[in-house]
Amino acid sequence: MPQIVDFTDVSTIGLQSSPVAQALAGLRANEARYFKNKYDHVFSVDPASEAIETIDWVHGILKDERDIVISARPLEATSFVVDGTRMAYVFYESGLSINVMYGLEDGKKRAVGFKLSEGMEVPEELASRFKFARQKSKLAGTIRGSYFVIKAEH
Image (cartoon, rainbow, N blue to C red; front, side, top):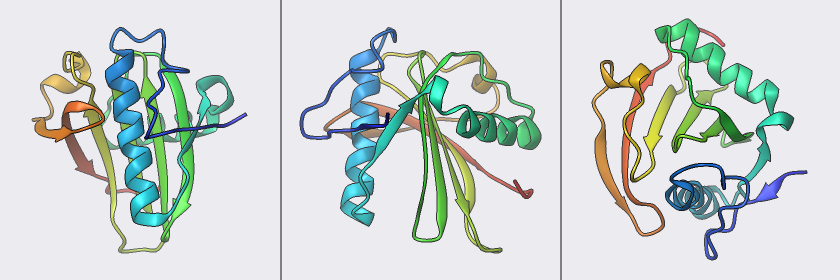
């Protein structure tokens, strides 16, 4: 059953096994607030065991586009469509969050974003390939992020 992410009362439910659970919960809440404010979309997540299709889609894009294989264990994921764009998120035990923004019409934006929770190291599989910019969040502290543009159809 999907869990609605509350961005006013941040909870670590579903993320407790992460060594940076509180920061990851703040990162997840930050995304929930963004989608509620911008699209009036209620952000909910499923346990990884119930979101295999979404996780496989995200991992397939990473592998096909950049030959990236994430070593961290997925904890939760979600997929939804807003404003003609399919969004997918995977939250990992390490504190990593990966999102895919995939415009459903040709010519629309398609990209993969990486966000690192405060307190986590840059994953080895990303460290040599991406530079991470910092941004501040009231809910998540300092978030480090990077992205790449998707070139192929997925």
